[in-house]
Length: 335
Image (cartoon, rainbow, N blue to C red; front, top):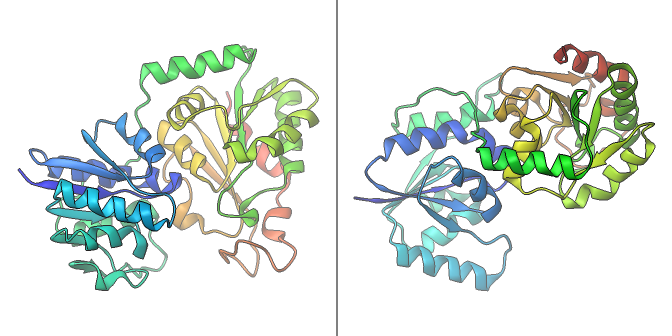
């Protein structure tokens, strides 16, 4: 029996898009001792999929003490090999220092000097979706690649928790439940203006008698509250009030999920809730919703996709998208 480690992505969207690859590796290493390494909140989501019995938490900061402690722990476990679904130099470093014999991943961020087997990143045009990019890495490492469908099982216990959260906040489920996710960790350029999310929520309330809930992280609680206060009817602000598995279950209970290009968008796509995603500076061919039911709303701009975190111009790629544009597409997913 070998000890195999999969270093999973650090970000929610990437972690969701890596699901088909992790399932493939889980099948390939049946009979071996399989570990997942990554941030504890990402591992909390994976644990519910029964991918691995063993988890290694990796540091979330550049603290030298944490890095040394992680290296020591890796050496104590004694991995035979590690496969990196991350792209950073830092994610490889503790395994290199711990002298893990086999270290495989894409040659990115100058880390080819740390990998025992590096794979050249794909240079396809049009670009590969990130789901397929992870699978491309596996195929180059001679793993049998299975289906690419992205799906996330939601345990009954998490569904019960999500249902209780809605009941506790007085959400009437007689009308369609529509979730709005106005945040995006990458930067302000990926965020559709709050005022337009407010207008969109009003359209669903007035035309479809929809129940509106706002979801996101704790850092998005105050902007979400602004949207709630602006709506003509009751809405609930659940930003920062759920852990990751509860958020997945809550989205599963919704009839429609509308968001920027963000981690929760991919979470909604994985649990099967219809998704409408608003894209601006990023490329929907790489990071858009991977499967149906979903739709992308985008206005072409001569400078896009720029991938900038801040816009040096007028942010027209997002500002030109109207609430009516998004509503007309989202409405098609409601009966």
